[in-house]
Structure formats: C-alpha cells, structure tokens
Image (tube, rainbow, N blue to C red; front, side):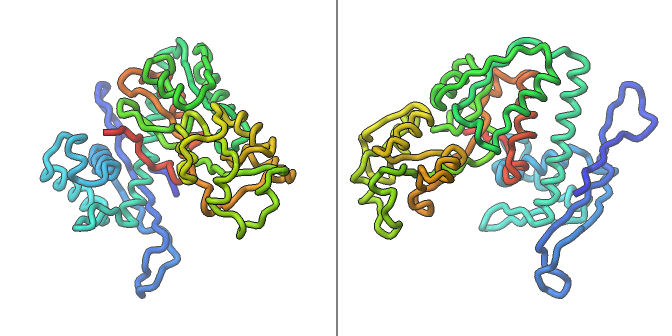
Length: 356
C-alpha cells in the first residue's frame, strides 16, 4: 500500500498549523467482483481527502478500537447521535461504507478495515514526526528502567538488540537500567514505579496498567531422551499417561500451566525458563518450553514435543506500562521503537489495551 501524504496548503499564516491528508490508497483483497465471484482483489479507490478533517479519522479509529459506537461514547465524550452524524459524514466524504451495524454488533467492511489500517499508519507516522520534532526541541536525558524476562535472546520475534541500538542512537544521554525478572515481579515493579515499562508474557492483567500487544510466543510441552515418554508413540500417550510422571510448573503462573493435567501440586517449581529446561533435559521431568528455546535440543534429538495439537499454546508478549505515571518523551520513544521492531503483522493495527 502507498502511504498517505500529509502536507499543509501554502501559504500558511505564521501562527496557524493545519494538517491535511491529500490521498489514501485503499486496497481490499477477496472482495466479490462485479460478476458475483470471489475477485482477485485490488485497488478500490485512490481517495482524495483535501477536505477531510483528521478528527473524523481519529473518531473512526476510536470507534473501531472501542468495538462500536456505544462503547466509544465515554472515550469520545460525545452523544451517540453526534458520533453517528460524524461517522456518516466521513463515509460520505470517502464514498465508502465503512461498517455494518445490527443485531450481530459492530463489524468493519473490507473497505473499512483497509481505511482503518491506512489511518493507523498515518497517525503512527504523525506520532513519530511529533516525537522527532520534540526531540529537536528537547534533549532526552535521565534514566529509563526497563524490565525483561529471561531467555528471549534466541527468539527471532524479539530483536531487542535493535531496539536498544536505535534508542541509544536517538537518546544517547539517557542511561538505561535493564532488569531481568519473572513476569509477576516485573508487573509488581511497574506498579510500584521501580520500572517504567516491562516486556513479557504476563500471567495477569493489572487494571491500572496499559498494555501493547507485540507477538505470540508458541509454548510446547516437552520431554527429553531418557524420559519414559520419549520413545512412546503418540497414540499411546494421553493426559492420564502424562499425569503419572513428574511435571515442572512455573511459579509465576501459579501452576496454571499444568491445569490441563488436573494437578494441583507439581513435583518441581521453577522461577525461570533455564530452570525448567535443566529439569526437563535431566530426563526425570516433563514440562513447557518456548519453541525457540526448545528448537536446538529438538533438532539434536534431545527433546521431543508431545501432543502439540493438544498441549501447545500461544503466550502473548506485551509491553506493560503505567500510562498515568510513566509516560514521558523517553518512555514514548522506547515504546514506539519496540512496536516498530517487535510488533507482529497481526497486531500492527491493534489498539493499546487499557483494562476497564
């Protein structure tokens, strides 16, 4: 897709600053063609938006991210009728139907999804522009305390080294403090103000914090060579059979990762992934490991993934921060860079999650 072009008309009075979108290229794939078939997809429209107020697009995005017109009322502080009027105005100016409303709830049309994705790119670009201009005005100084979980170095979805390199280049006078701890301790320290943000798969959602989805980590249930289950065929293994052996639980999940086995007291508890891996590789225990962490041992024939269709699951990685206390140009910059480097495609247009 082509990016939207943002530019002011000339000349402008010295004290007036106005942003206009001149065009958005909207592509929709898999839309029925004129003959009624499943079309190949393609460009629906090059929409000229000289007269469209950015506030209408922002209103549209808020409605989408809230999940509907009624849900967006408190965020927009507008009546339902006013929201509907503005939304209809946007559809008229674009010449597109953006959503369907009915008993099934609020649903974007393919064109609406395409417009939302393009608008998200526009506003992300504006956010980066504001941050860079602000950086020209203000020197970024001080300290940034970031919390991480252990053993993500082997995960190609978590290129934190690129985030650190770009952040250091953009804010060379900021001192970094990196703390590696279990997810529950990271949440505690973000709440307490010892950390300004943390990146992990968290065991719970804290209502006072905000979260930004990054990517999903695949977690597999593994046994090592030497374990009785290692050589058993899949058809001979079920939950009852696994339950007979020693299982490893992670303390910060409160043994919830073993809930499927209906075991309340595991034979071993660990506070990090390396502890789990050591126990599993001993051949005396079975337990969960991330796909990237287990991969070299699986390739070497030392680990086996058991019943992936039943036992494997996705653990969402997120940035957690206190939007009311921790937000600053330094925190904004680090979160923006983290999103650029680490956000999976399926999460790139998603909103920041703020629990009710």
